[in-house]
Structures are given as C-alpha cells and as structure tokens.
Length: 123
Image (cartoon, rainbow, N blue to C red; front, side, top):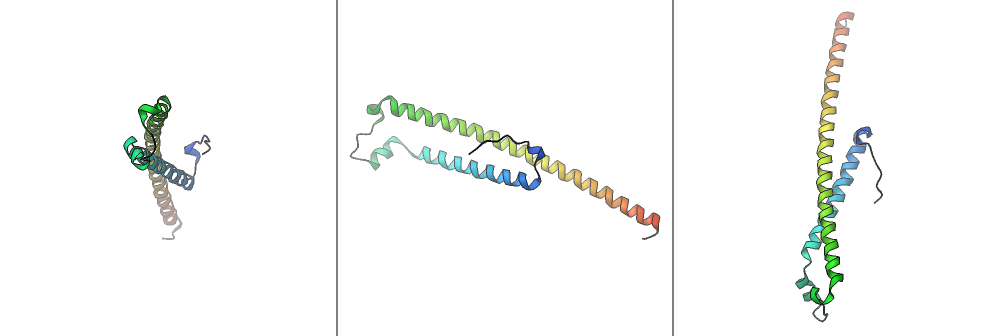
C-alpha cells in the first residue's frame, strides 16, 4: 500500500468518506491478521504436523527471532490503529463543525431572503 501525504482539511466530504472507508477496511484487515497470529501456538503447530520435529527449543534463534518480529509487528500495528482511530475522531469533529457552520450560514441566507422579500413587497 503506497503511502502519500494528504492534507485531510483539503479533501471534499466524499473524499473524506472514501478515506475513512479505506482506513476502516485496512484496520479490519490488520485486526483479522492479529487474531490469526494470536490463534497460532506452538502446540497447535505440533498437532498439525505430528511427524515434524518442530520445537521452539530445537529450532533455536531463528524461531525466536521470527516470534519477536511478529510480536513487534503486532505492537506497531496496535499503535498505528490507535493513531488512526484518533485521527478518525478528529475528522468526525471537523466534519461536525463544518456542518454546523454551514447550517448557520444557510439560516442567515434564509433570513436575508425573507427580509428582501418583505422589502420588495413580495411576501
């Protein structure tokens, strides 16, 4: 997945919606991967391959390194998930603020139209 810097404030509402949808899908994928990795245990691997000589003790550093890498990946993914969730919350607040501002502007325009109609005697 290519990373491009994006100024979220410059995006249209539809672009923000698409961004949030893609972010949600990405996070869901990461959560599913994390669940999968959590479901794998050395004992389950031994049950799946009873003839193999798989053992963390006999495989040595390679398996421990792989396990450490996986754990580190999971930590990084959790941190990224937290960061993205915070960013989503900020985007929601920004969208709500913009909607409120737009509602106020529309109300003011309605009042102006009403006043102009009264002045022109078109009521």
